[in-house]
Length: 283
Ligand code: AMP
Image 1 (cartoon, rainbow, N blue to C red):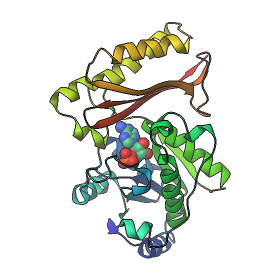
Image 2 (image 1 turned 135 degrees about the vertical axis):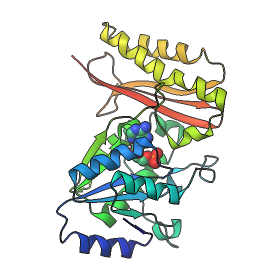
Image 3 (image 1 turned 90 degrees about the vertical axis):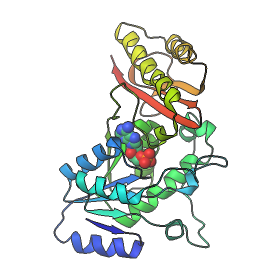
Image 4 (image 1 turned 30 degrees about the vertical axis):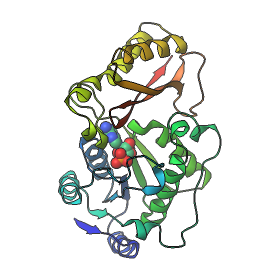
């Protein structure tokens, strides 16, 4: 495995490698890798001849006052984890490499999709994501790119970009990897102290309860939302950002639990803002 930090180098390496490699899989990450990231890398390894993992804490997707500076970073540890999961190339550029002086071009998905859920409390976030992912698609030119269902809205936004900008790339959405007690793995879980970590289980627990209610016949999104909010609010130190029930493909609100349903939520616990969701196909 090799680690590169320059666009020109990674392009050259991919050009050489692609003489033998028929397909290239890309796994974009912000690093501080955990088993969620590694599941994406392993899947990319199974499905492609060459696996590129990008590690870049992208400043344009962080808003003012967010955790850009304190976001955990550890390239050495990430490199050995990525290698053991099957990565061939790590692309870990500097901020200046991706946004050099005079940089002035952004990709923005318009409409409701980027304004609701995480887009409502993080304005500009998806513009940053869309821009950096489009740049990575142009630099690496993968056949497939792997994203986690944990960031369900991100997957929907990227699928929209691929359709709209004619990227010839298959987007592979991978299931959420969880800790034993159900908490969705996240690089930001490191911000939680012992008590907060215990409280954080309420996110997945509420979602799983809601899933059970749907399986038992509940079809009213308002009732489900009310239940989840009430359940989360039993933890006094957990602050809800949003709980929304939408169509998982279009992210439009649903009036009835039917078809592709996404229940997504974001909460603040201490200094961590955590997201989680469940996706279901309901007859
Ligand atoms: P991040 O480094 O948080 O930007 O995440 C990089 C990629 O890993 C994104 O596509 C995430 O959706 C995905 N990812 C993060 N956490 C998980 C998880 N617990 N399970 C599956 N995928 C994840």
